[in-house]
Amino acid sequence: MNREINQPLTAENSEIKLLVLDIDGTIAGESNQVTEAVKQAIKAVQAKGVKVAIATGRMYCSALRFHQDINSDLPLMAYQGALIKDPATDKILRHWPVSKDMALRLLDYFEQPELRSLLSVHFYINDQLYVREITPETEIYAVRSNIQPITVGDLRTVLDSNNEPTKILALSDDTDVIERLLGTLRKQYTPAELYLTTSVATFFEATNPWVNKGAAVRYLAEEILGLSASNIMAIGDNFNDLEMLEYVGIGVAMGGGPAEVQAIAHWVAPSVEEDGVVAAIEKFIL
Image 1: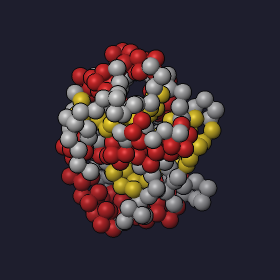
Image 2 (image 1 turned 60 degrees about the horizontal axis):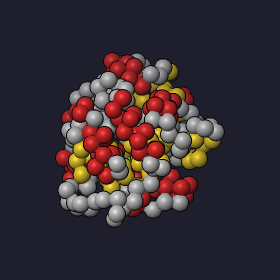
Image 3 (image 1 turned 135 degrees about the vertical axis):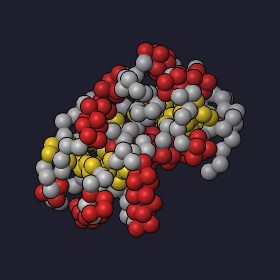
Image 4 (image 1 turned 90 degrees about the horizontal axis):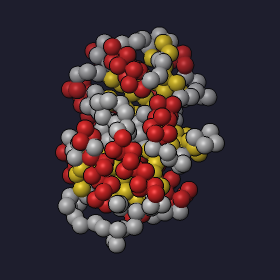
């Protein structure tokens, strides 16, 4: 879908009733916090009667404080939308995990001799993080996410038909390794078998094939809120935001993100460190 980045969009031709925000690289930068300027802009949006929601690749428990920071009263879309849960009631509205069989196949692939030492593999089950061992990459991830990984040695031991991963993540500080992984596995598995993406250049992510942020936002908007795509604005910064930005009436990409993501957006905002979300909100909603 090709779009003019500077295509004129106003409240007259697209009445925004829902704003959907990514977390990392969008409302949270290096500080891992939402700045006061972004909070105030979101508050002004809500004062106009526009609902605000979060769609993130993060774990639900890790994303919850951001949901609270922006005073959202909507369900939280976590793990790229694999888990949609309402914090107000603790009700799970949707959960689409990766099958046990597929998780085992991916694990076998990650543990090939030439890859095993290069990757930190994360299994997310019941909103907890299970790892083979604590690596430096896992430590950094755990600190930013404010979670405690559970070390189990062989990840196969945590899998059964009642405990299938909500998401599988492979981390490497070598971005070339992640790129090769993504390219190889996209040839091996069709989109009908797995959804594969990167949320940052060092994260390879795999979820159920029905899962992506676009599908999650569609579900929230159409099935829960009774809205259409034209009523939605979304802001994101990376490849895992592509489907969401393509679906909504106004898709905004953050500055500093991949060129391919910026290319499909209606508009490119300043970077997260420049509070780009504030600029986008002021341009299209306020």
